Image (cartoon, rainbow, N blue to C red; front, top):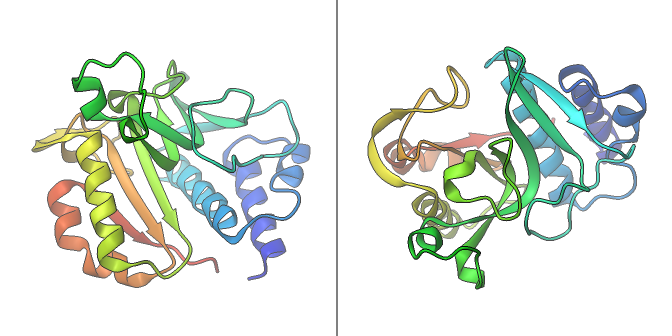
Length: 226
């Protein structure tokens, strides 16, 4: 699939499953996108599709612009960028943002009111936060965290990175109910019970990382652009 074909498919999903207007859907992803950002958008579209079809939630595209602009670097929630509102039975339960850094468990436990050093925040490519989250959302405000890799990953290095992200999102616990009934997970062995997903074009991650993923509550997904 060419980049233009992928953009068309992504825009179609935004229109169908995120209540995007025709102008927003067609204008989304305009211009040249780096391969990594295009893959991030591809994953975002499938996350929205799964929340709609499998979890039976309603997702709405929120933007004052016709262009879905992806941030070039991680940082706090920025309301000037487009995002997606997520509703359950008419109640707003979360917002989806891209390239957001969250305040880690260690930073919050150290009683830091705001993160002051680079080690106190960690980026996620896609996050679903509580509706009132702002700035650097705390680890307790993350409902879903998603990391995306469009190239063949350093298998052990990336696995260690994801295990580290899980540790800064939550503590290992008995399986606990998440905010979801079916997708991404209804229960996860973590407290707080956030869902953490890793998408890659490399099928090896989904196959070879299953044991630590199951134990710590991380879903490793193979999702090529096809």
